Image (cartoon, rainbow, N blue to C red; front, side):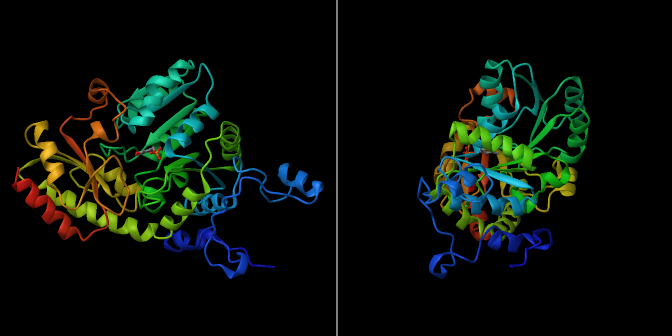
Length: 397
Ligand SMILES: Cc1ncc(COP(=O)(O)O)c(C=O)c1O
């Protein structure tokens, strides 16, 4: 019998490459194949029944499970050191499925007010329609969040660092309070990645990733991944297999391939973003820099205690008016002006056309997002080239 690997003892660089991968594909292939089959045929009704009841491993129908997707789920499970994992067609599918699988009319969700735009849209528009109350607190006012948890809370939703203001929430401190109140703790770990932050080890119950971002890393596939204990993941998986927000095998293949270099890429994103943030901080045309790796950032101490690296995303505001933004964006040579983050290329864009495109300007103001803010997802290029590009562009304004 093959020896089982104790993944806990294996480092994240090795987990990114080998996690979930088997060594026994047909014809000795070394790479996980994309299995595009929707149905799985059984010669024996007995065996078919056992698989369909979950008494034997195997697959029945593509909306439920798929061999390529299962390898990806196992890789993220290992990286997040979770009991179980499941997948979705996008990060937003993961977030909405988790909320709707766990909440019922009369329940209350407590969250920070500046979550990703799609998430805040669910909080502001969709949950209230089902008579679910959402208490949106000042994201870093931990005392207020504690008070709201203790008043009434079935689900605490954290996003740290936040998109696009890079605010930091203390996962362990808030999870301890939520546990005492018997509330489920959900953390969106998209910006940090499992290389920089492990929410489950800090007390969270469920971790979400938009796999579309750093996990995939190449801007060519949408996906959502979720980790947690077996009971929670089974409940969420069951909701998804019925409503059908399943991850496509081709997307799973691309995310799997991207994840093999995850640890390597994140290390470079971390160091590039820190260098660019420090450079921007001293530039006369820059007003404010939002990055948790800066000692001047209000979230620095908490970030330092719960993150191994500060991530690849930063935001900044330009001195002067909003009208310099279009010129700045269009003059950059090595940055896409696009609504995305977490890719190998540097990407720049204002929240009003990226993270918070779904929100009105009044909602953005309420969320504390200045209209002259730019978000930058720093890629894995040589940082000297990126800084030179920014220097020339700022000079030309
Ligand atoms: C923090 C965060 N969570 C979730 C999502 C949603 O992910 P997707 O675009 O894969 O639906 C995004 C998208 O930008 C995000 O930034």
